[in-house]
Image (cartoon, rainbow, N blue to C red; front, side, top):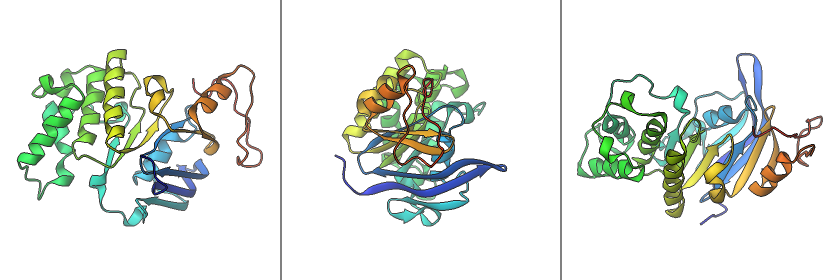
Amino acid sequence: MTTTEPVISLRGVRAELGARPVLRGIDLTVRRGEVVALLGANGSGKSTAVRAVIGQVPVTDGAIELFGTPRNRFRDWARVGYVPQRTTAAGGVPATVTEVVSSGRLSRTRFGLFRKADREAVRHALDLVGMTDRAKDSVDALSGGQHQRVLIARALAAAPELLIMDEPMAGVDLASQEVLAETLRAQVARGATVLLVLHELGPLEPLIDRAVVLRDGCVVHDGPPPEAVGQHALPGHDHVHPHAPAGAEPIRTGLLS
């Protein structure tokens, strides 16, 4: 159930990669129980925004809060599960599926020592994504879709209140997309808050409460997904969010392609 309590809050956030501005003063609030999709073309700032939220990208201006605490003072990271883009995560690591998923549980352990509850949590996370039968296999032996399931299980192992996922469906086969959608549906049902970077909504569309569209590091739409997808996908249809910065270009066909 969605409440008015903010879990993620960005106010006037600016960030640069090198000397290039990537985020140009974005405002974004994700409330408890919401599922928010961050959409936009390549280079629009989607991944930079979520990486700024978790502290991987420094901000040059503005404020970020997690669960009401300034990000730079936030320490309770067990409440946050992060799924990075698969192309940037755990490639070539000589580890088994269980070892990778177990690493996501470390924030809940005492001094890294696993108890029965920790081992059960890892098994449950593997079961959620349908990877129990591959628990002892090397992650290098997995398909792209299976690898993505393991990364999601790693994030779920700590039973986080907030899930941040960067392109979870990218390069994933249809069967794995359905598994991932069902897994996410179960997390939403138990009350998790979710921020997703997506290239397109796909099978996750029924779960999305709001779509936030970025263009050139600015928020140009924040509202219901049908409006975001329907208007922006119509050939020849231009749309500018009423709160877009002066001079912002209109959204045109192909934003979500």
